[in-house]
Length: 219
Image 1 (cartoon, helix red, strand yellow):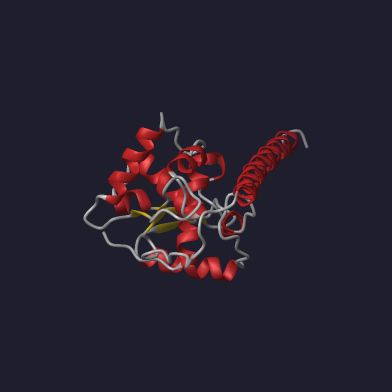
Image 2 (image 1 turned 90 degrees about the vertical axis):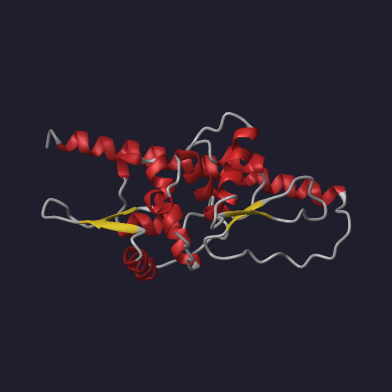
């Protein structure tokens, strides 16, 4: 199945996959929950500021292509949404995790993909991650591509192809100086800290909701 998505559609799919694998108790997602997931400031590149109408429009388009489905019923206060990406593309769990990380965070190295997938799928080592990327790239309709190595970077990066071929940066710079490399490393460390903080916030919110449900039993 050859899929070509708009950027917002890809973000919606990536967010649904991530939340299914990291917070299954709150999955499928409401429209509000999905919008918040799409607009997270951590673990997202680029950061977006989507409204619910835009997310709902993307969901409608994805439903028409049988990439998402909506749950609703008399016993549900609001409809909930879930993805069908695994079924549509016949993705194994490690492939689904790797693809979701690339959708949500843009081009990354093998090491970055492995580390950032840890909550969705625990790759045993870099070799297993590379094998998964090779399988995604080697399909008749490739889902992943290895990008040309950029100046100043030791490792190549990989990008998903669900939105078509990625735009390569026009970069005429020569070797990158050590200060620039240090700044890049600091930015990556800050991004990881922001991600960990976001995870703590989500865990705290989950505990608050569980406590509220427990207290409601005695009211």
